[in-house]
Length: 176
Image 1: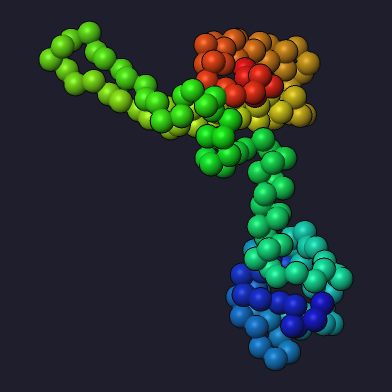
Image 2: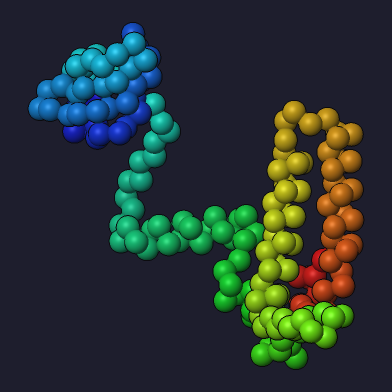
């Protein structure tokens, strides 16, 4: 491994000393904290390797900010998460600008008003979190099929409880 590839805080693996963290880098050696103590290592001759997964993107010609933005957007879309602005677009038009009013039975207590856009956003976030939970349960390697089915039933019942709010959605496919 080239000395130029190292940076302070980087996790590395040494064939003899195991895992370590780079604490300092000089012209020819690196100070690395291993479990058994700190050692000066010459990375180019010692067989030192990065301990964390690495990726090389060759031939990619775009600003870093644009690359990161596109990557984050792809992850958000893949996980089924949504930005608040895109959530409001899915609110049926008749509810835009509306408000949810909670009035307590005791007239001496104050009512609570919540803009429907905020309430709708919270409902959508609960739906998205249920979807992620469902994916994690289905992909869990230690749960038996019976356990997965049992947990799925709780999620299904939760979806059923949220069908009351389907009237807020613009598109039928976004509903519970």
